Image 1 (cartoon, rainbow, N blue to C red):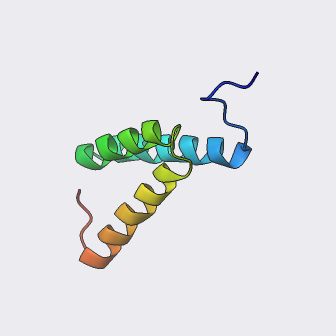
Image 2: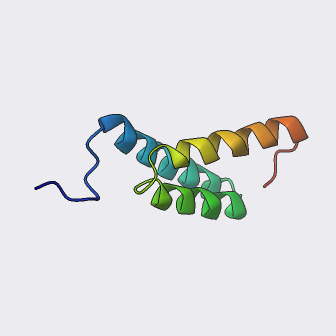
Length: 71
């Protein structure tokens, strides 16, 4: 019997870990708000596949369009 939290697709697992890694880089560069958002998205990504990737991409797009290097 397969558990509900089992990540059957390795790309979903990679998506979660890339979001966690992105959050760690945000904390290192003192972007704490972004880091917390990304960690929450990574946690939700276990239930909703690729949610963390979507949030990470949206944050990067917002940063690019606003032209700022802060949170």
